[in-house]
Length: 543
Image 1 (cartoon, rainbow, N blue to C red):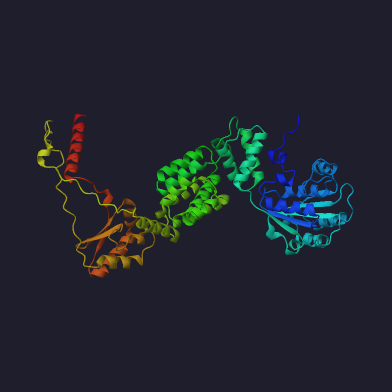
Image 2 (tube, rainbow, N blue to C red):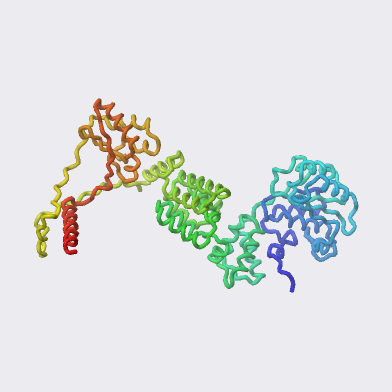
């Protein structure tokens, strides 16, 4: 039984026509082979998995092929078979990552002067050439500049900026571009057909997107998913096999963030975490979706070609209506910072949860980017006319006395029952002089620190409103969080001191939580409290 061979090795291109997505490079090399205008040194550069090493091996076969076919090697002659099997001593593939010393290059230079013994030209393929040391590059300079006629150098690298300019000037440089998702998906469908893999179109698109422009990565992912799943390979099975959240869940999470629905977003995150989804992959998908939304938001229809394909156009258009450009930039920075911190994090889950919490609630952060995002959102809502100010809830009118008719017998008299509370008086009007509150806010903000100083503004819709009655200044807070923040001795002391200085008399500041007051009809609330108290007293007496 023969050993299993990985798909990316089994389906490595054997001719220039088999190479996907690099027509500019392959056509130029074929033309040079046909016309005989070959260079003595080539430099192939580009990202991983784009065909650099494959083209180097094809070129090595083509220059030595006995029966070339329109610039392509025949793959049938003795020279082609020897190069494919690795038995040809005149075609050497060197890994510069492990042979990067000056001594290795000197040995190569000494051997290169000998004429080939099996084929027409001696070919040196140096992969990852940027790993060579400076002294090794210097030792390579002379022979690359003036090599013997029988010698051909093919250098390959993924980091062009690390190759010295003296080497670049002596080589013909070919840049391998990232392979498009359409080309990768088509190649995956071809390989799946040859291997009897039932590959769904949606799964092929997902694998092509995850390959990020590298054909080798796409074939490796297909190999992994096909071996882990039986039957039809769908997009859902690809997500389950690779441990990623997927487009639908990513779009659902972004929808919760756009609606500031923190509860639903955290519940979805917990469900995905329980299912074993990779947190880095999840945040990376969210970053890709945020990037796509930002492209659509800023470039419009012209940016559709730049999308990564994480979400459909319909979903993206809906989300761009809810999120401003400033919000998307803030979200992108926050996600990227969280991903960067994963390498030194003690708890990735906690970091991811905090990231989602801040994405849903930008008011938790008081930095300039968060404030700008919130202001930009309000500006866009005002421009579109979708902003509607919340109207204060009106208290229900007190029912007339005759509305309380009841057929049930009256409650028995009880001397221990608490008396009915009197109607609470109407809220007292502030006795402060004109401009007192704005002057006080300006004076207080100079001494207080965040977040307390941000609550003291002269706006009519400010979260804290001051009501002065005699020597008592009520700081009426709109919710419990603000009341707890302000109800501290040092803060109240600053407010009391500044208010007394403005009015010229002692003032005592107190924090009042408006959300803790009972809403609705005060009389009905008193009756309900009395009924509950009476039932409790009866139970105690019976026991």
